[in-house]
Length: 300
Image (cartoon, rainbow, N blue to C red; front, side, top):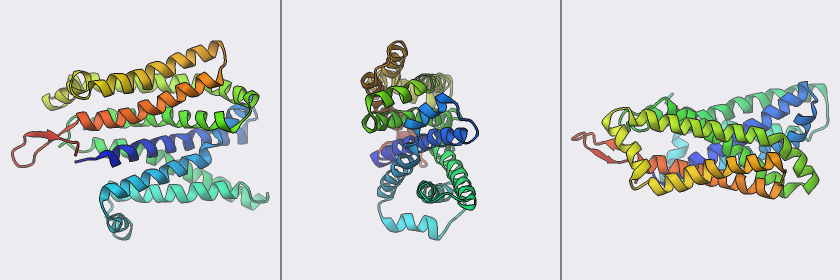
């Protein structure tokens, strides 16, 4: 069974990995192209190169708390089994290490050899960030005993949410980091991207629920609980209203009239929706009892 620690881990690791991927993408793009919109976006997205590993490291703390004892976490490293759980633990640790290393190397004196090394480490960190973002959804989707989450659409939902919440993290950091003029310039480059990411997240969530309702009885029952059962308020107010409707409405309004203060409200709402998404999916999910195959709550 899962607890709130896992929900917080899923949120923090997803948002951190998403922020780092967005920051890395703009950073790599700037190395081959000096377009103005990339320069504007980098003023906000470069924060993800540090905020990303910090959030993932914090998420790892919650994952360790869920295991119940630090020695169980160390056992994943000292006795690797080749399982997805062990691979995920190593990916989290290596991502944080390489991301912090790349960040520090960026402040070192320029030199051809160092620049090449920094690029290699940055690429490796970005690949690990992609694994971290994919890992949670893939891990949850591989267990037939939890029919609601045993779907190939679950990783897509988690990746879409990770990128949307990652963009929200960068928006909030940028708002408090820069002057108003710098903020407007950076946010203008991200508005359309933010709207696209939230829209993709909405489509992925809708597709997942529709497929679940059309699936087997256990998955359909969990989907119904999400829509009209004990998880309905968390889903409709948290995921749909706070996580989708408010951010999209803010993006549309800011495209007409740039307003950093309003944009950061939309970003905060996206983060709230991301937290609610993890909690609502885990609360609505049910698992099969291995003794009599009855359905039990997946939530501890």
